Length: 153
Image (cartoon, rainbow, N blue to C red; front, side, top):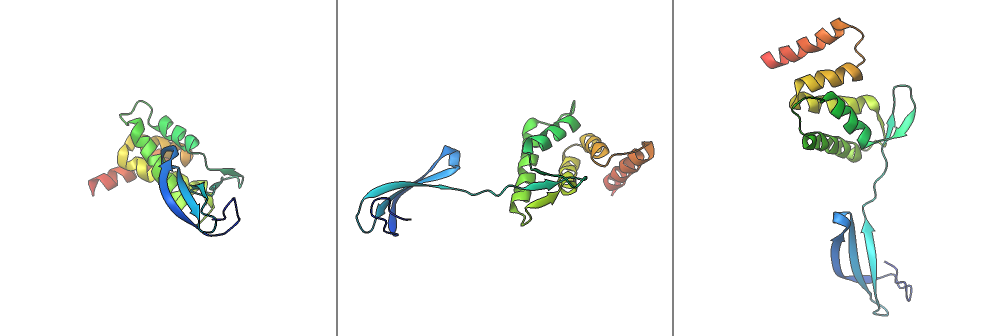
């Protein structure tokens, strides 16, 4: 870290502590040349994830949009909001940890369905019916039969 007083490029860290609910780290430093002290802040760099939609348009990942979709699927179901927020957190972490900066919306939908299936089957079918654009009752019944077959195993 370059000293703001003399421009020397080496310093030692005297004190380090988290700030802003752990989002940043405050470091108190001392220049090894002029011995003056200064403060720096370290921030975790996040690269935005871009979602490639079915029509090939692109938009930044919006966790609120995903949460709203999950909330609609879980309407009048015994699924706590904390569970849905945890699901969104897990999906966002998966996306941030992947090496791809552009992610197809189908992948996000698949992650959401996999997690919803474990939490509430009715919410899963609701989400899947919108996400997979069920065209008729037969498509709906096929999905229900898959769930029944998995449950019987």
